[in-house]
Length: 596
Image (cartoon, rainbow, N blue to C red):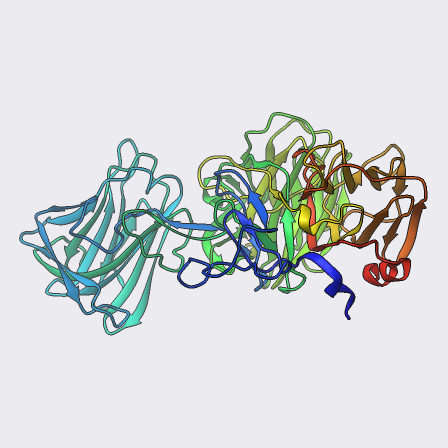
């Protein structure tokens, strides 16, 4: 019998939905079937309840090694143009037309006279940096105009020739726009904007020169999303359509190669930058910024290119964050541009730090700044800058000719680097996963994960708790426990910072005062605590770390949780697997179970 077959509960991060993380054992638990009914299975027994509040700011690295976000088509009735909130102004809409996707889901939009349009009000569907997309094909009219009139700011307008997909005339008031040919005369048109107070979104039949005309065009599948580019279409009805990392969905996080999936649990954090991707809103000097220039770590073409000018000055861009405390961690994803002459990214929050984008190594720093780099694939690095002394929320990102080189150098006039996903975390000492923002600072709530009412799978007089984990940080209170739902009766282990130690693995409850400290932050470990009256043992990475022959067990153990037992001091880091055994495994079995 394989050792894991003795387990009464086994969690290997794989199957989940919003609010639930499913265990492999006990048998009979699985995710809902295609009918969403989970017929014939008891999905309530011994599965973890998961919570991350109501916000949608969380991301993960998916199995393709790419950053995955929450996605939402904020347009309701995204392909039902005869239903509110769509309104006709001098147009009629006829369904059942041949679509770009081989269906009969397209619509014929007919303007009886020049200037007729179909529109919808903005509500929250057009707020912040947004991309609106639509599929369109010529009818009797040869073009389309998409317009976002605004109050107190510049209107956004895109004019597309539907004969060949070219610009009928120059777009105005947009960050960028793009037209993709799909064949059979269909095009997907996207416009990205930062209109402060939009009035509505309008679709006009137009001619090949961009003037609105009487006539018909075919339209299908509209979408509005918080993004610099259009993503895969999500069909909505009476409610918006959602995908990606949903609210309250456990995050199974992978490395940049799509390996080592683990349950990611993090504390509450905020990105204080209002615009984490729209660098066109930052203050620019010594060069130009070009939107949507290359594929980012998200796998979309939504990264900015910074190109140096030839002046002798600083070559950089800057932003101020809504951050007020000292002790800040700034991060940005960066990649060296092809043919770049100057190859050191500079990050400046008072003191400057240098990152070698050619070799992927950290350079020198000024003051008390601490820096590091993480390769995320395809030439991209996440550059991490921690300034424990800073109370300033501003940040400069630029380029320099050498490690510790001056920022105010003579520019090469060449593309320098690509940038994506800037972040400012306030009053902290280490970075967490990326939190995207599109006009306002965003907060990601803390992850919480536990199973209650599980006394039948937890050994009451003897047992073993096992976890394969790593720690994102060290601080007082980051625990995994079995307990009675409080702190009176529990077995617990977790991470804790102590004076003079980089980090300590400690055990509390039935076994007081034991500590184990032979590891570093982020290191993967396998740990097992076996318990039985007067017969306790702790094994870490295949080695016995301690024993206790005088501790005893009392009370009823009914909860297995990624916290201290009482719902506080949540575990923070990656959990690759966890298991419970209703027996005290032998020391030989503990060594085998925990060997890396």
